[in-house]
Structures are given as C-alpha cells and as structure tokens.
Image (cartoon, rainbow, N blue to C red):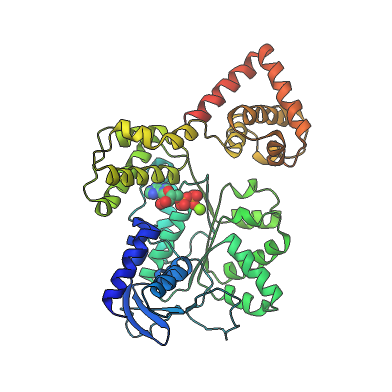
Amino acid sequence: MTNETWGTVRQELLKSIGHSNYVNWIEPLEFARIDNGVVTFNVPTVFIGDWVSRNFGDRIISQMGKSGETVNRIEFQVQNVASRPAPAARTDERRAPAPRAAPRPEADLPGAQLDTRFTFDTFVVGKSNELAHAAARRVAEGEVVTFNPLFLYGGVGLGKTHLMQAIAWELQARHPELRVLYLSAEQFMYRFVQALRDKQMMDFKQMFRSVDVLMVDDVQFISGKDSTQEEFFHTFNALVDQRKQIIISADRAPGEIEGLESRIVSRLQSGLVVDLHPTSYELRLGILQKKVEQYRPQFRGVEIGAGVLEFLAHRITTNVRVLEGALMRLFAFGSLVGREVDLQLTQECLIDILRQSDKRVTVEEIQRKVSDHYNIRLSDMLGPKRVRTFARPRQVAMYLCKHLTQRSLPEIGRRFGGRDHTTIMHGIRRIESLKDSDNQIAEDLELLRRSLQDQ
Ligand code: ADP
Ligand code: MG
C-alpha cells in the first residue's frame, strides 16, 4: 500500500466515523508498512493504538480491503519511545478468545484506555470541584502517599472520570517508572471472573498487587457482588500495606453505597473522601468557554452567537456530559448550515435536549436532596426502619420521584431498597393528603421541588 491508498482509506473513514473521532483517533496514525497481510501504523501512545484497534480496527481492515489491500491484522508501534523496544499493541482483527499468552511482565496491565482529552489542562476548576481537584493534583504529584485511598464521589457527569484519568496522565508523565493501573470496577470484576474461570487466580492477584497506583472508577458497581468485593478488599489491603496509592470513585459516599460490606466502607473512609458538587452556572459557563477553544480548530469558521453559551449554561444544569454534547452538536450544525449559530438556531437544534433537561431530575438526586434536607442519612432513608423520622422523608422522596421523574412505581420501588410498588403508592398518597393539612410539609415540598428543578 502506498501513502496515497492510505489517504483514500482515511477519507472513507472520515465519512463513516465522523469528524471528531477522525481527528482524535485516525489523524494521529502514521502508516508505516504493510507486510504479509499485517498493516503497521506508528502511533504516539499505546493508548491510541489500543483504542483504535478496539473501536475502529474492523473498519480500517474492511476499508483497506475495499481499496484493494488484503489485510487481516493491524499492529501499532509507538514512536519516540527512547531506549525501549517499541511495545506493539498487537491485536487480532477479531477479539475471538485470544490464545493464552505467556504473561508479559511490563506493558500488560489490564487497564482501560485513557481518554486523551481528560487531562488537568482541560479540567475547569470552580467552587464545586476545587477540593476534589486539589486532592487529585496532590496525588498526581506521585510523591509521598498522604491520603490513601483518595475517594472521589459525585453525581453523573460531574468529572470523576476526567479527574481520575488526569491523575493517571500526570503520573505517567512525571513518573514513567510507576505502574499505574486505571480501570472501572466493572472491568475489575470482569477480570476477576475471568481469572476464576481460567484458574488463573495467582496471576490475577500477582498482577493487581504489583501495581504502584491503582485507580478503580465507579466502585458502586461492585456493591452486592460478594466475591468481587472480597477480592477487591484483599487487593486493596495488600496495596495499602505496601503504601501504594489507591484512588477510587463512586457516585455516592462510601457509607451510602448499599450492599457494600462495612469493613470495605470503613477502609474506603480511612483516607480522604471528597465530593464533586453539582456545577454552578459560572462553572458551566467556564467549561463551555474552554470547550469552544478546544473545538474551534476542528470547526473552522463556525461562529457561536452572543448569549448562546450563557443560555446553555443556564438551561442544561445537571450533567456536564450533556452540556458538552449540546455544544458539539451546535458546532456540527453550524458547519453544516454555514451561518452563525444564534439563539434561535440553538433552540431549534437542541430542542430534545432542552426539553429533557427541563425535567431532568433523577431518583438519586431526589433521595440525596431529601435526606440532606431532613438531615438523615441516605442509608436510613432507603433502609427498612419505620420510625417517623425516616419514614416521612422517605415518603416525601417517593412523592417527588413520582412527580418529577418519568419512573414507574415499580421502578421507584426498586430504587427505594427494593420496596413493593404498593408501598410506594401508599407513601405518595400519604403525602398528598398531608400537604393539604400540614403547612410544614407543603413548604418542604415546594422548597425541595424548586431546588431540584433549578439547581
Ligand atoms: P463522571 O465520571 O463524573 O460521570 P466525567 O468525568 O465522565 O463524569 O465527565 C463527563 C464529561 O464532562 C467529560 O467529557 C468531562 O471532560 C466533562 N467535564 C466534567 N467536569 C468538567 C470540568 N470541571 N472541566 C471540564 N470538563 C469537565
Ligand atoms: Mg465516570
């Protein structure tokens, strides 16, 4: 294949995977050679190679086929890696059960790929995340282990994964000698189950115990999964004993994760626990401004009109991911229609997102807000105790879930510790009748509703 053929293949990929994927993943590839059905590309990092082969490998191979090249495998080699043999992130084109390879000592940590966008540079700091950010920065220095573990928690889309991966990038840059392993709790469980099945527990244990920094994202995932928790606990202890840094994230505080063993909870609480609060208007605006800078080179010529960013920051409030998606869509639209993206175009283009975010309140948010409001623990609100101090807030939360979310009663029941839908209905009725006779309840409801809807 010549560079020219690769040029054609790239054009086709651009059409099929979209501009931003193309810029992020295909542009960094440099065609090196093709040999015996194996095409090799130079890539700047192992992660990019790995990501590309997982997500676009098949597509690249089939596109090459269409351009007349017989290719059945892609290999990546990392450039600019001084004095190390280039670790080839080799991938068979189909991820059929891989032949069990001899364990490769280095380079074979079973982590997730890091997203190249999730660095400290691109993270915007505001009041709601400054503590989490400062803690992450400290840990990313990779010097003395002061807080162990660092436990980050907060609602969906508030930047937990971004911060964790920023730590990983930073550590890799500052201390390339450290073995940093980032993975989701789900991947941890998957590896564990796989090791059990393949009778490779020794390898599994050894590998996890040999890392210098372990990062596990979304740890709430292992709640209720007993044997995974057990293994996680042992890994955790072994690493803490060796004074290795551990960083954990979850969507709620350790004590609020149901179905998590208490010894794990107290282990998780033994370091530094920091939360990411819901974003403020100013932070959202700051994030949008930063993203505009980032997108601009990809969308040359697209102008975002006056007031548009402010409008988005005002209207899309709960989840930064949705906010970003909205902005990305505006850029894409702008480049299609070839005129300035003004407020009117914004509203037309984002009608579905705006409509959703108007009532975008989750059961979890309601539960959290209500338990804060009444000053009780979330676990007590969700738990079985029937004393009035817990039962009343619980019923208030049920009522709000019914009115502010689209969830059905059985769904709400499941999220309230597996209660039956008739219990939920009873709770809702109770509040409906109370709010006419009890001013305090009526006021609480109004306050909670407002703070949930316009946060
Ligand atoms: P979480 O893991 O908490 O659900 P993520 O870390 O995946 O959330 O963040 C969702 C999206 O929002 C990501 O694209 C991330 O880059 C972006 N984001 C969140 N917080 C910030 C921030 N403070 N600055 C810049 N981008 C952010
Ligand atoms: Mg996440």
